[in-house]
Image 1: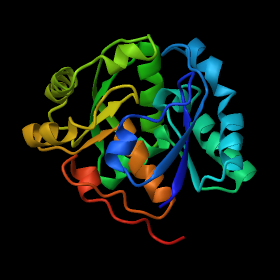
Image 2: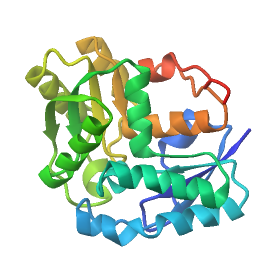
Image 3: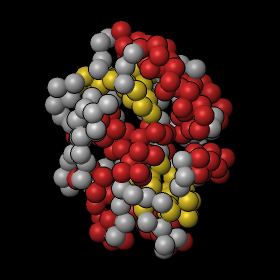
Image 4: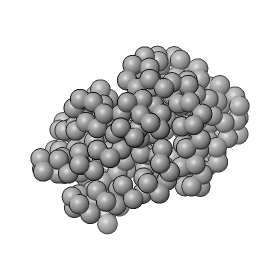
Length: 241
């Protein structure tokens, strides 16, 4: 099975809890960057460490690199996210993606157009997420957020029930949305997609499951999993380049 390098936003080398639950046979190797807070200033502490972290992972022989951290990769704008991937690919020669690209790819995979969105963020970060989504052709129908600036415990402390309730509020604000997006890798969302889809009849894409699904696709696998929502249940292997 493949070895996937994860550039992670934490200050320590930690693999997301969802990774071994979703893909227990895959080896995930993390490398820290150290986001300070869910604010532009907090992301600035880590952004310039992303490429060196990717270089370090490449030297460890990983097969692909995923940059974890949705807001970390979109807060400087959509072009920053594109340029970041291009630079890492050029330097390492490896397949590369980011969590921001993963949610975009996930939304496209489920046929999304108009979105009901839930985030962990405050307005300044939500505005940058909306910029990313519109750049890629999506309609932001409604957005609800927890308003968290603390990195680490703030988002991960939110329960699945709280995430489901806030996502349902976003759907109520945009009943004609055709998909639900939950953005922030710190929110524990693996278990919320299926109940939300059953409640609202709309596919759900969320940051960490989408990033791990996309990471599997970087190494030619489908990432298919049952029981965690339509994106994973209907996943297919990427087309050969």
